[in-house]
Amino acid sequence: QVQLVESGGGVVQPGGSLRLSCAASGFTFSSYGMHWVRQAPGKGLEWVAFIQYDGSNSYYADSVKGRFTISRDNSKNTLYLQMNSLRAEDTAVYYCAKDRYYGSGAGFGGPIDYWGQGTLVTVSS
Amino acid sequence: EIVLTQSPGTLSLSPGERATLSCRASQRVSSSYLAWYQQKPGQAPRLLIYGASSRATGIPDRFSGSGSGTDFTLTISRLDPEDFAVYYCQQYGGSPTTFGQGTKVEIK
Image (cartoon, rainbow over all chains, first blue to last red):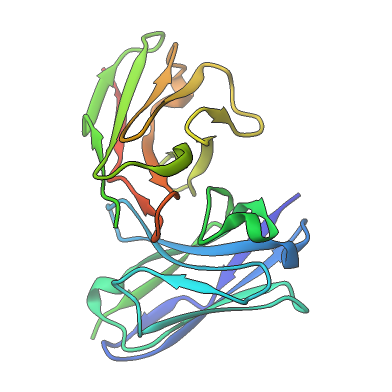
């Protein structure tokens, strides 16, 4: 069965950095695009970033562009999110998520058929 | 970017009733690239519908999606007690992909 397990969350000061990881199993990781989606406490879902199956292209929400970097290591079945220049408004549960579409069919990101349980990032002094 | 507006914000219904949730896009969503998700407290979202009307694997047939262009609907034909949750729409026809703000379906 598909499993996505995030790690790396925690408390960080404004302006600081954090790297999230997501270990994937139960599917051919190298064949699917992957997303990061976040949810601030008590709020709705906000898409953060998407990376294509082979890492050739990535896309970002305007709110994180230039500060966050999504990457993947297909040899380790692992997705990453490097977060720099963190702000209080970045406080959220961050979900790692698998795109439903195979290969290049996902384009710049499609529907999400599997989600991890999330990791909490708190930006506070 | 395409802005999705969901209505109503909260829907108060009883088990067995029909629920109709709306998702309106600020621009036409190409190829009906519209998905619906269900989220319960403390849980990750679950994909219900993709391509505006295709049910995801394992989703009961009481859930149905319809619409095209800028207006989309999620219908739950008869509410089961486990269906009380928050529902989100997502468009993936334009970059960046975006989510609506959610509709909460609560027990009346």
